[in-house]
Every structure is written in C-alpha cells, then in structure tokens.
Image (cartoon, rainbow, N blue to C red; front, side, top):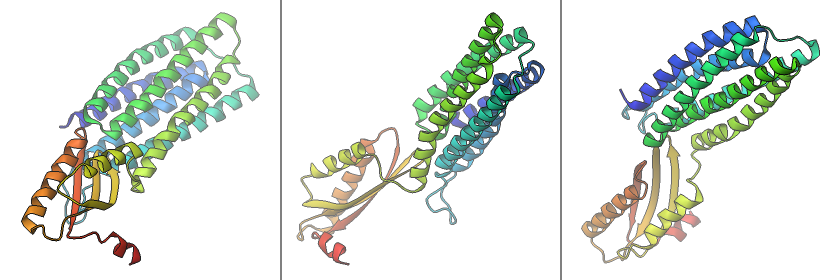
Length: 294
C-alpha cells in the first residue's frame, strides 16, 4: 500500500474519532462552535474516505478505456473537498446567525473544553503527518487533506478560545460570533483549492515559471534549429508536454531521433519531483507558419 493511501486511512480513523467526541459534547453543551466543528469532522470523514478511493484508483495503469490513466481523480478530489469545506462553512454561518437571533447559551463548558483540547492535539499530529507525506510525494490530494485539517486545527483553537472566554466572562454571544469568523476563514481557504483543481481538470498550462524553464532548456539545445508549439498541462502528479523541434533538412532520422531522446530525458530531469511525459515531434524544417495558416 502506498504511503498516500495509508495517510488517507489514518485521517479517516482520526476523523471518525473526532466526530463521535465533538458531536456528543456539541449536542450536550449547545455550543454552535463545537457542533459546527463536529459537522466539519463528519465531512472530514467523508472526504478522507473519498480521497482513499481517488488515490487507489488514480494509481491504476492506463487501459483501453483510460489511455492516459486516471490521474485526474486527484484534482477532482481536490475540487470536491474544497466544495465540502465551503458547504460546511455556510452551515456554520447559518447556525451562528440562528444562535444570535435565538440568544441561547452554552452548557457543560468544562467537558467541552477538554474535548476541544484533545481534538487540537490529535489534529495537530495529523496535520504534521499529512504535510510530511505531501512534501515527500507531491500528491495534490494529500496536500488538500492537510489543508483541510489545518483549517480544522485553527478553527478548533478558535473554538477552545471562545469556550474559555465564555467561561471567564459569561458572555454567550462570543460563541456565534466566532462561528461566523470560522466560516469566513474556511471559505477563504477553500477558494484556491477549488480554483487549482478546476484549472487542472480544464488542462490549464503550467505556471509561467515552469514554462519559462522548459523554453530555456529548449533554447539551449545546439543540435536543433528552433522549436515551436509548446503545450503543457498537469494531471495530478503528472506533467504532460508536447513540442515541435526543428532540425536542418540534412539531419538524418537516426540523429534526430537520438537528439529527441536526449531532450526528453532533460525535460524529465527538469522536474525531478513529478512524472514528466514529453511528446516531441521532429520537424525537418520550421513548419510553424504553415500550421498557423491551416
């Protein structure tokens, strides 16, 4: 089993434990912040289970139905996770506003504080582990999962702070106000995750810095006359790129093939943390203008 799949199993187990604790004390205490945290942990459980499914199937080899594999399950999972974060944020916002209108208080503060403290410790350990896996593998799904639990960590800390302030000041309004702040932060965190996933699903080109690196490498090749029609895209942890390289009309097919192989290897080494799939078209002359006319 890949370390990414193990990471999703561990995060699912942690989410299940936190759901049981927070939901119990959220209902008993009447705290919208604790209850919102419980709902978020429930969504974490669903997301982590889906992430395991996505990673398990995205790693399958290409076949007759999926000639390029199933790598786009990774950005799809990121979009779904970002959407779930946004929906849970809207739920927290609704509950917070409802509590302000109703003016209800918070009970069983001591037990709720203990539960949130334990939740912070467990979540912090999980975030550290997921970050380690994400940095080691470069996997987008694990990075999204780490971001998700990082928002949980901050929201849990805010909930604990609110419970402490309520215990000291006896001002229950602190609870829903904090809930509104948490929902705003969650929406802010989810937007870039959804944006990146959608761009990847739409086969957006690599970032300008990466494209510039590729062009610099191609421009430095002395065995070719020029290059054109560079196209790039990312799918999960894989980079796909295609380019036309131009030779002198007198260059033999064998020599051109050898140069093409060397450039392919150089392109793969340009992004050592990713799987690069270069597709190079060999041109005996510059036909870029003809292609544009067509």
